[in-house]
Length: 433
Image (tube, rainbow, N blue to C red; front, side, top):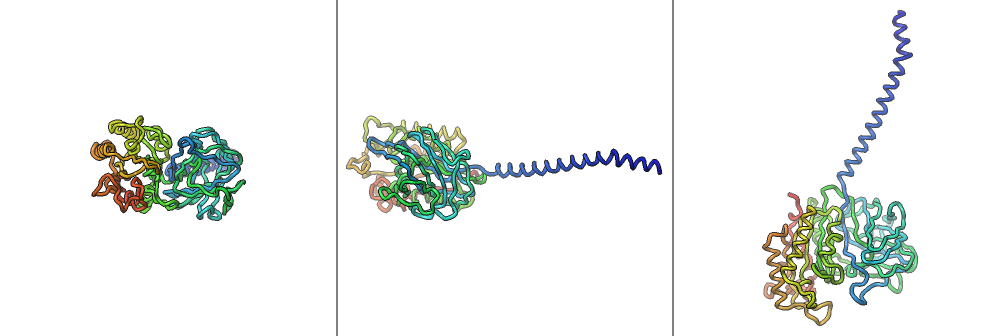
């Protein structure tokens, strides 16, 4: 009995504290294991998602050509409307002062558009930059907002509201947005459901400082960026109706869940591959506008017509020089692990330069177009070919757009023409199978 009493005493005096320590240790291990599991799950969720561009545009410097510029804004709110491709539950905004002076953004909001200058009640989100509601953007610099929780559906219209309290001076812009955005009288109206309009200048069909919008999407979701000229920009398409061929392609992709992808339109009116006009040349802007896009997997190139059909003798280029430029884009895309597709050049006989009586088409330049199209179709250097020339050309006059698809300027399609272009694209091009 005494031996048992001693054993019990030892158990109470020595072993129980040891067991208590062991229990606490196991409890701590369990808690740490739980936290580790939670962290692992969080990391897994994070690894299963990434940022993908759902909308973007090309910005150019304030002065497009002598006398063709904007004056900027002063103590005003801009509510700019954009049409995204894929949706998500978290979004972020990209701004840029490309080609312009520094900018003080005093407030920035994002919301679901309710049409005109209105936003959907309850959808407004304040954007921050590194936790701050305002930011000074240095000259020529891009910035990205902090993410915000906002459920946006595929193909939604979003309203980005920026308030600038001081005089900005001429602003970087995308002058031909084919979309109406809104300008306020003096004051910060970024969070108002119905923004009042400046009676002197209530609206604009340009975007200012906007570079892109990204959504957090599943890891398998990817983006397509299109480097192009006014055909890609959607010139002559219906304002506010989103009938650019890239919009029409985005609709097709969204309808096929296995192909849902971000669609990034980097079209720019008048753009050339080898010379600046109304903005940087294609080779110069390829890194900024295309290769830097988040979630990018595919590139489409629709450039070359403006290189061929120029009226400036000092900027005349040969077909071989244009091919050399295309090869530069192909090589740079492949070096970044991207697939890249080339578009044939579309017909433009009868097109007049910028509404002037100056024709850009000549028989000699038409031969160049045909030669470049032959190279795009047959060289095999692009990963695939998108034959827009075949879709738009008039069978009886191949240098002209078929009348039913001609907007009337003989260089750009109608809304139906843009849809026909998008409908001609094989969606299996955007599959990893």
